[in-house]
Image (tube, rainbow, N blue to C red):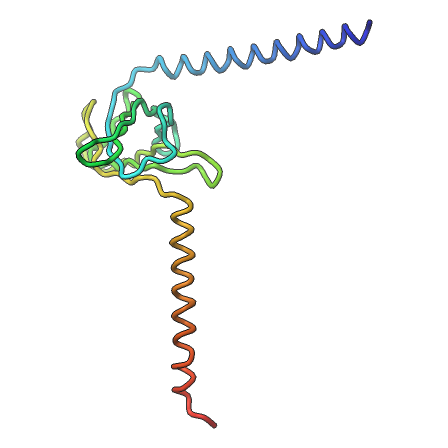
Length: 167
């Protein structure tokens, strides 16, 4: 009988903690959604790893989120719509970059501010962009360049050996 009471109390404690976490997460989400913001746009060659709801960061601080992604049928680029909190002015020569949190982390949209005194108007577009860099593509370039250098060194070795006079 005492095991049954212990199990029930443990289950109730776990349930209370789960409800607490859910309430805390809901409170945090409602606070960030309630903040006034304005929309901006940017077009990217590749937007891998970014989806609606992805963070928009400036200097590592979350200042907004991605609200829409669509394909531009004329340019075949991905057009992202995202929000930035009111009060944060984005210079019109800023760069929008799809950055990665690390090898195992996800991607996010990073805004690197420029130095222009003029700002992007609400609903405007950041034209200087850099798309996502795929880890596999990066590794293949590295392996390909290392193989080319190795092949060039092997081909150059006999030429260098013949240039040295025999003793």
